[in-house]
View 1 (cartoon, rainbow, N blue to C red):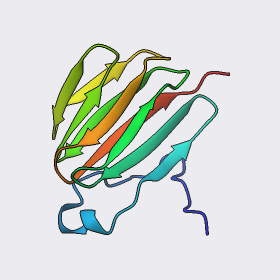
View 2: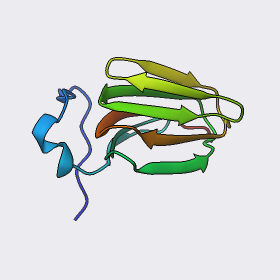
View 3: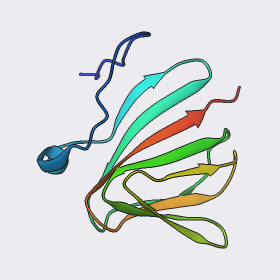
View 4: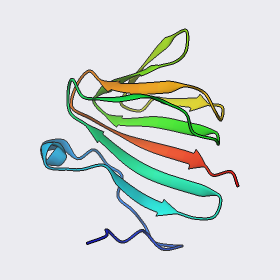
Length: 109
């Protein structure tokens, strides 16, 4: 069964999941013609392999600590920190701790 996306004007709670983090799954919060928001959940030691998306993205760490690998660098993000990446930037994500993050992706047609 698909998880319903939020509707325009609907308030969404993005506070840390805390004790519920271990049961949480990555979920798309909404997708419109130009924008997609995803709550990424990664437990300590888990990774997303290097990949590219066409549009610009932001990664905002909500809780925990993640590293974002870039072609020639690596950035550490802790709760409350955000990273911007230009479209088509090769990047991967690795959780140093149980973590959740808000991903914003600009969709390009």
